[in-house]
Amino acid sequence: MPSRRTVIGLSLLGGAAVFAGLGYRSVRGATASAPADAALPDDVCLTAPTFSYDPASGLPLRAAREVPPEARCPVCGMFPARQRRWAAQVIFDNGDVQYLDSPLSLFLYLQRVPRYTAGQSAARILASYVTDLDTGAWTPAEQAWYVHGSRQMGPMRSGNLPAFATLDQARAFAAREGGEWLTAAHLRQGLPASLQRLAPHTH
Image (tube, rainbow, N blue to C red):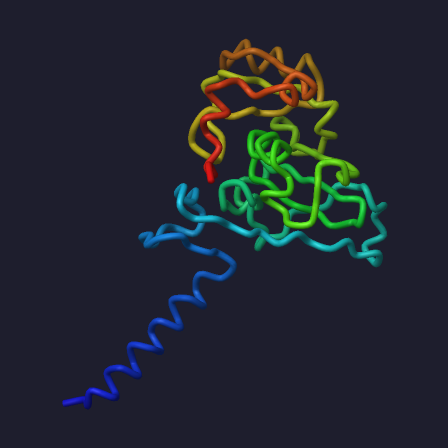
């Protein structure tokens, strides 16, 4: 029969292991465990670290980079590398990059950059990219065309904004899957209400 002191010690060790497993999550209130690639509930705030620029890569500072497997989306908590054809990224003027799981998360992120990436602001964004859904190639976010209201579900398993490098691609996709095509300038002015409601952080 273990002593009371042994039981307490084991309980403390177990608690430490739980907090270590949370990594860089900070939890406000008790939450149940969830799959690593699931969107986080409203009462969980995620701090997703940026990734530094590596001069040895030979890439220009503002060039798109491949998504590391461990990268987390600061908006929803997902791993963008697992749904690479939807991934997006933002590069800051110091070379740091923040990866996002979808064009929708990108535009939600741009509304509140300091909220999701401490010490940064929208004014310091050097470049941003989305993935062309057809080809998988990185496309400058400001030049891409987006389809809203289609039957295609994105990583958040709800309405999303599939991105395309050309208007012809967006039109062809909308003809197959429904929806309307929009520019980045239009989305920056304000997301459709049905997409704005998908923002997971309200506090």
